[in-house]
Amino acid sequence: MKKIRILVADDHFLLREGLAAVIAGQEDIELVAEATNGQEAIELFRLHRPDVTLMDLQMPIMNGIDAITEIRRHWPNARFIVLTTYQGDVQALRALKAGASGYLLKSMLRKELLDAIRLVHAGKKRIPPEIAAEIADHVTDDALSDREVEVLRRVAAGNSNKIIAEQLVVSEGTIKGHIKSILSKLGANDRTHAVTIAMKRGFIDG
Image 1 (cartoon, rainbow, N blue to C red):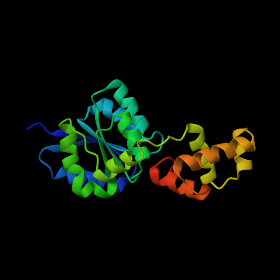
Image 2: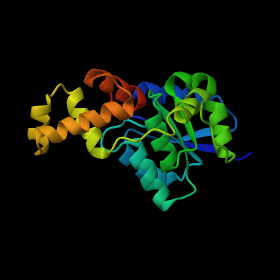
Image 3: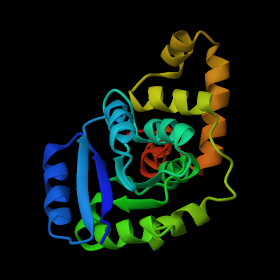
Image 4: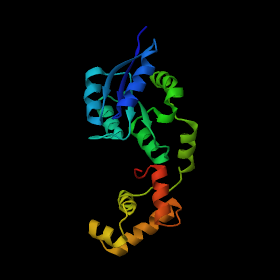
């Protein structure tokens, strides 16, 4: 029987070791390579052409979404399952748009990983119901612009409007306008609430 060949890309050694142990016990699945960042994942994909790649979102040098995008540019039929700690709809949607077929929270791996690998290999998608519901909840929301996300990152870092305006070389009034728009789009009461919502949904990293 031809085995499903797996590439794992994650910068945490213990997680890679755990995934390797789970896969090692399967007759129909084998681990062919391990990458510690997105750039390595691209090189190892080129070398091994795995059937399914398990891709972490947050990695050094190059993140998972950029790596998926780059791999699919050369190999459009490449199949990916994203592994993440983020439950937010923004990250999930970004990963799916980049070409991921599966999206699993790391807390689910022990129970759901093997089924997800087999499903995605068979050409199906695997999105946990709670993440699908999260995406559906926000499907009609106005998305934050890149500039608004940038402003929010700087708010999260503890900067005042005045300092953010200086950093981005715009007027303080412009930043106030961005903040007002951000609060409205996120349904937030104030700046702190906006940062909390943005982290939960995956607009900015926690």
